Length: 166
Image (cartoon, rainbow, N blue to C red; front, side, top):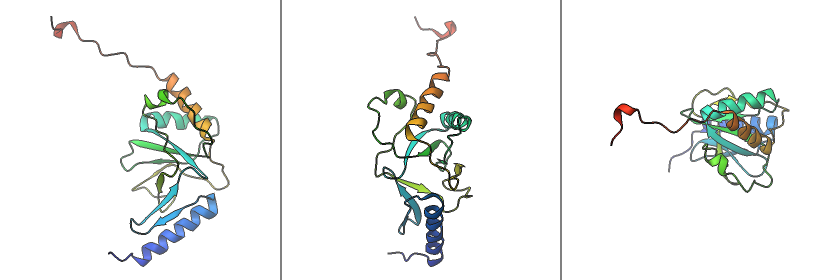
C-alpha cells in the first residue's frame, strides 16, 4: 500500500478547511485518491449538463443574479452547477434527459479542486464566493428548461435530391 505524501495531505487539509470555513461545505479528504470530495444530497446538490447548454444557462443565471459555483470536467465537455439542496425532486424530468441534463443522486461524491484558482483537473467555470448562497436547485432547473425552450431545434436532416435512393 502506497504511503500518502505528507505535504499533499497538509495541502488537502488546508483546502478542506478553506472550503468549510468560507462556504460551509461538508468536504471530505479521500486519502487513497488524494482528492477532495463533497457528498450531494445534504447541504448541496447539483445539476449536470453539456458545456454548450451550460454556458447559456450560466448566462441566464447571471442575469437573474442567481449564478453559483460551476465546475467543468477535465475535458470541459460537462458542467456541474452546484445548488442548494433539492428537497423533493420533480417527477417528470424526461424533457431534461432529452437535452442530456443529469440530476445526480443523493450520496454522489463531487470532486472539487484543491485550490479555488486551480486551472487543471476540475476547473471552476464560476468560482464559489464567500457569504454567497448557493442558487436554489429548482431555480437552476427552471432556468435550464427556459433556456432549452429558447434554443432553436435543429430539423431532422433532409436528404438532398442528388443522393436520394429510389
